[in-house]
Image 1 (cartoon, helix red, strand yellow):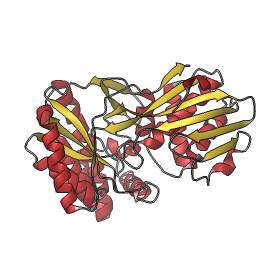
Image 2: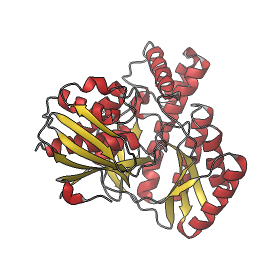
Image 3: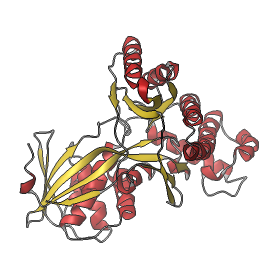
Length: 374
């Protein structure tokens, strides 16, 4: 039981679900995520020392970080995300003060809903708040991304951290990852609901082929730039790619084709969402999953089984994996009146075909960072 009176501030940052636009953020593309009410909460108070004392509601472990020697915390089993976040905030010229932090994460770990981003963003926002500094959510997202890349070793794009920091209740974010221009689009699902389903297969983006996929897209861009003046893969049109693909090795061409076609799907999804056309949006989700399966090869048996079970259900108009892949979650658009039947159908079919039991989330679309003085 948390006694909030023991702390000075309560700071939260959201997990996120990406509606569509997968594996294009690090290619300069536009993505369509939404922040979730599943979040990481940091209870924080200053302690007058040069130490950051970390504890968790879900762990018995306690970790102490020296704010003058954060580099040595890279190998920590628990606390490395917080240490990396603190180091990036400090290196950006901001003030760090000793504090006690109690962390409570309700974003399922390994779910593809960005628990790591929620931890990084909330930690930076809490460190700023307890030091009496105002913070810019966009800067927080950039520094949180650097913590993920430079400290945790995942060569991620900006989408997760930006969504966690800058989310807006009831809205999806049409985010241009090249410029960070963001349009908030109201999520009006009408007679439908967004259902998130966790395959519950353990996975890690560091241990997976996530970094390998990013390297493959960088290779594709490098080759294409020999023939076309573009700054990122997302700048290549579908029509132009048809003439350029012959210069790429087969697998590299597949990776690039996914990125370029997924960027086009985001544009179509923007129109469908603004028109309230959930059937059209659902079809785009189906196409996205197939591309991630066939061209990008980041789904795997469990995610494919979940998506195919959802797509076979009569009240579901579309389903796909969301997140980095290699495990994690699917997102499905389901008629609200059929949600319970949908869960039962997918649960039974998935259990028969895999060794895992799925979990279902009906999280609200929420704000990104929140700060409450206790």
